[in-house]
Image 1 (cartoon, helix red, strand yellow):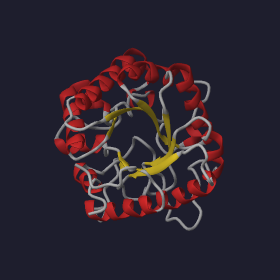
Image 2 (cartoon, helix red, strand yellow):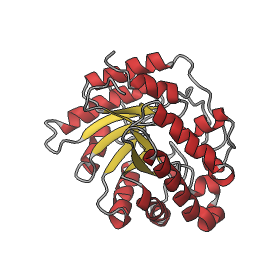
Image 3 (cartoon, one colour):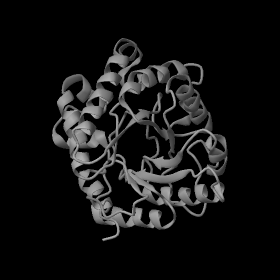
Length: 302
């Protein structure tokens, strides 16, 4: 099915925007969780669409099953139920696939994407424990997504150790939208090298998501340098978004960003080809990257 080098793994694309494009229920503040509440079959179909495009990993649609999107009261009442449902839908789609597909449980930001200053270390463990326990029966490993700071990363590592059993953990950081030079840091301002040092003993992969592809490309160079000879065999890679740059005053959950139309399947394939040439072995798409983008990635090498 795939023309990729055998060591390269393809993750799916952006669930929320695919749900919106397909006509499924979608709005702020619930984002992709709204379809779990109102139209679960649409979620399973979105997983199928990515699988049919060649994705080898699908991510559970629990990114928005957090207090930030559902509200504290609804998360307390229905968080477990919705995360279990999301896990079950992903598992069913993977099990019916005509090629091997792994299911990644998501451990998303709890208090808003891209906003490390809003992280609440005292409250976070209880919420992540809900997500870990609910998804664990359905997943093959974990992806911590859109991680903005080292404190957030370390808290997620602790949550997985508490409830994730022996499942692997991939840590996926996010970096700023600013046009990169030769240095890209986490959104917290901490260096990528410091982030690698903080998690290298607890993860099997260090990746970047929900960031512009240009910034991810620079960040991957920092990871490669930080890993050095890489005695632990840590994998690295990325799955970029295609959002337009956020304007001054942007706040999560208050606006749906537009799409960079120049990031066609072909141009994104070329971007990821450069990452692979630089040593990346994990590629995929985030928000505004659709099944056609994932299909293009499976044709790298042609």
